Length: 154
Image (cartoon, rainbow, N blue to C red; front, top):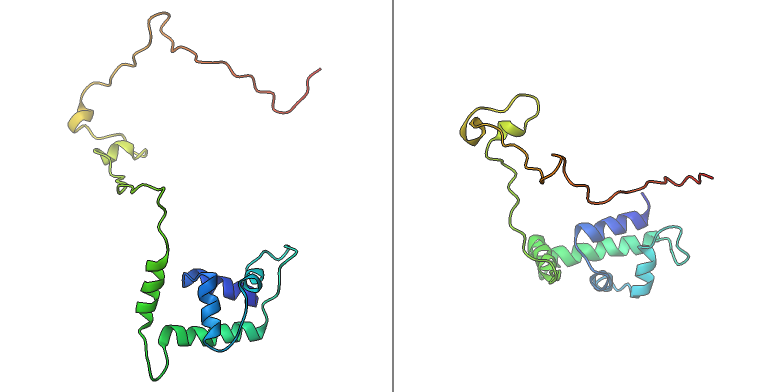
């Protein structure tokens, strides 16, 4: 694992934004800009990719300890700090609240596939006949599709 990978994984695990990482580095008097920091998080084949040096990672880890635990004079609870980070993440306003998905069918044995369904409840009746439109007894074709599969036939 490279220093860049460690920095990326810590950013995701601790839910840190770039400006928070800059503030953490300033706790140990290490100044870095957001653009320099963004270069560490780029893909390795990107032209603006930059290797994260040992000094940057060391200072980030030392600043992270101060950020989460606080100092001897002013100690903090790390769980409170992480809860604060989680609360600062903006929620998506476009997504609607989804009700919980309930996957339990009325007759759970009916959908198992390895055994025949049980004969209890609504499954005990006769199976319903498929209703076809009037005519020859076949369902109506909506449209016909021609598949060429990328081959030129001449």
